[in-house]
Length: 296
Image (cartoon, rainbow, N blue to C red; front, top):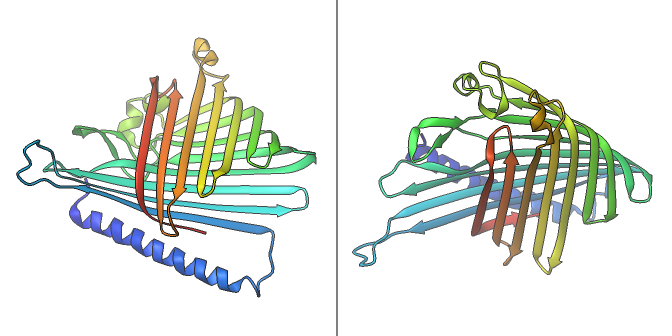
């Protein structure tokens, strides 16, 4: 479990990260006249959100609470001739403290996404798509904090897909792959012995292969309002249970970021997930917050 010292370390690391990001951005802004534009383009978004509620002799009642969420998104795009490589790394971690209960995490994510392709005609490319996701720390079946349900690389999911990418507009990408493979890692012995996340009991890796469709939307719909949405559909065609091969895994994530000023951003995130191997129910989560941010 996280103690107060760990919380302070996480908080100050995020403040340091924001400071470094600001310094880098300032340096880049003042170097644009001397450094020629190259094939690489970078972007960075860092945010620290804090929420605190306290009560004293409040007749209507309530519980004191403190929540903190740190977000870091980094992107790098390489373009040369008719070849383009897009990379994106999203990391976030959040904690929640309510009254006398132990500190709990309420957000934990590591997500890396890379897509490269060579244009073969207008708006159409032959492409590959690489995805990796896991989390930083252990997760528990709250309110029971003695039952662990996840850990770093438990699960860890690595996917490589080969196919075609169609971009009718700059802000919309439609990727289709008839050959998509996914490895699911459960490197925590306790969870692998339970057969969690689709692996066989006692094993640490599961293999899937099938058909994938990926839709990416990213656009500033209004001034200082950016909407990003990603929808991934996947069918595992080698599932040992033949009836499961018709099940479609759905991963849909949409975020809305509203820039209030240079250092304040309001954000909303909605994530819908259906993975038949993990839990045969639709999973959803949403985040709404306002906090300090920096974007370059």
